[in-house]
Amino acid sequence: MAPLDPHSYADGESPLTTHVALTLYLDFATCSLHGSALLTLSAPHSGSLSLDTRSLTIHSAVDPSSLSPIPFSLSPPEPILGSKLSLSLPAETPLSSILVSFSTSSSSALQFLSPSQAASPFPYAYTQCHPIHARSIFPCHDTPAARIRFSALLNIPSSLSAVMSARYHARRDPIPSEGGLSCPDSLWCAPGRIVEQFVMEQSIPPYLFAFAVGHIVCRDIGPRTRVYAGPDVVDEAAREFAGTEEMMRAGEKLFGPYDWERFDLLVLPMSFPCGGMENPRMVFLTPTVIKGDPAGAHVVAHELAHSWTGNLITNKTNEDFWLNEGFTMYAERRIVEVVQGEERAALNMGRGWKGLNRTVERFRDNMEFTKLKPCMQGVDPDDVYSEIPYEKGFQFLWRIERQVGRPVFDEFTKKYISTFKFQSIDTETFIDFLKANMPGIENQIDLRLWIEGTGIPPDAMEPVSAVYNKIKTLASEFKNGQMPGKDEVAQWNGQEWQLYLENLSSNVDPSQALALDARYRLSESRDWEVKVAFLELAISAGCKEYYAEAERSLKQVGRMKYLRPLYTALAKCSDEGKMLARRIYAESRNCYHPIAQGVVESILSKHA
Image 1: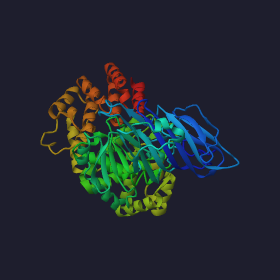
Image 2: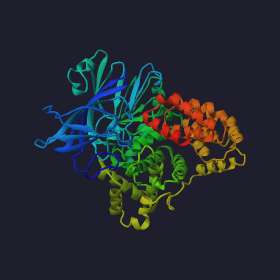
Image 3: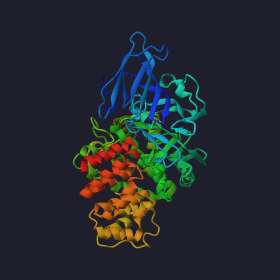
Image 4: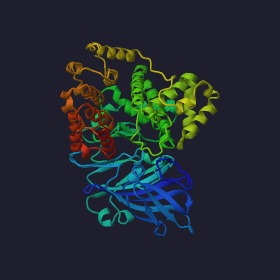
């Protein structure tokens, strides 16, 4: 069988799933999920069919028309891929759909939070399926090459409400027998239960499947946008994201129609492991992006940009991840430039440039993962997640724009999106399309070096900006003991402080870090980017005075962007830091999403 994706058991000789009808029962008492999935294939099939699963107990597989059993087996779990569900479809009557019932209590995509963990009187549950964790929610072809439509019935406690990356259809009482093979009526129709019903009519890769359940309220902030959050956060979030409709209009002018009808925003509890997740129709956001200054809007701009680049056109495998993220960084910065101006976009690019150089240094012992298209066979995409596909991908597209001019590149981008919308493509398809629409581009830019080469190509470029250059100059003066004056930072927002801290030398003297914080209270910043950047700097410099603040932070937030540097700094700084990192993790582990747990455990195994 021809492999379709290094991260999936799907093969190229069998039809892929095109629609999934899900029935899901969430049991908060046992932190478990019981469900059934009616999978519709692109064509009738007989013989072997392979599906991806992880930590799922498979109860049955049947022909949905006759309820005749379908023989199946589940392979031993593999660390990256999980377990292969092998189905033997009847030879005499090829099937176009299969009904599988399952349950799980240890999903790598699903986190149940107790009321105390959710900082609420109510429990909470949410999913994070990117990059290959949808298989831990339901059996599927968990590859972005397989685009699916879906419908879903979520049976939840009536005191809670649900949202999904789908169109909301109804909230109603459970109906006997609709739980089917997933759940007996005694549970499905029990007192205090309610069913929330959703439908997704546009095809998406499985990693964009998402739902959340909790005490969730909402506020309208635009004709196509609503903010969802807990009651204590929703009003502040609505103020923070009030400019979303303006960004949507800017995106439509740049990239074509917005094809998802709505762009709603869900602010999750602090344990959410990502800054944002571009789930169509319902973007998931960490509360740490609520900053009270323009920098917070960049995460929303990024997730919005994915509506065209990543959701409409999707990387075919994780080896082509830059097609999602490089294009989205480019689109984000174009939107920010329209809405907030060229200087703000340049600061964004400056942070990206610094991050790109830092990431290349991180992979200096394994430069394969500094390629735009690395070999990912046998590699967990969570383990090598980095800024390379984001920032090197951006630099590649920006290099093409500089070569052909912005008007030409804008027309190319619109044509690219309209040509491949609702498709999943690979890097080779993009390069062929680029050459066909920009004849001779391969003679002007070394495309092969950009795609297959390691490190940063010589024709990549650091952004040019008066504000960006001034911040770099001030950072270079810090090593000589000169701090920026209060008049020089009076107009700084979080993004300026982030750039300043990221450009400081790694060999900062402890007394300098203490003096900087004494003047500007960076360790107490409301902006998590600033706080974590400073704590990482200070702890790496040997300032044990900040151990307590690092502990408070690590026990409050679950975003991997902050867990990585703080745990790494503690684990690398001293034996005392190593012991502290291990203790904090032992006390905080259950508050972290399973994906974040894996990240921290990898750091501690390497450094502590």
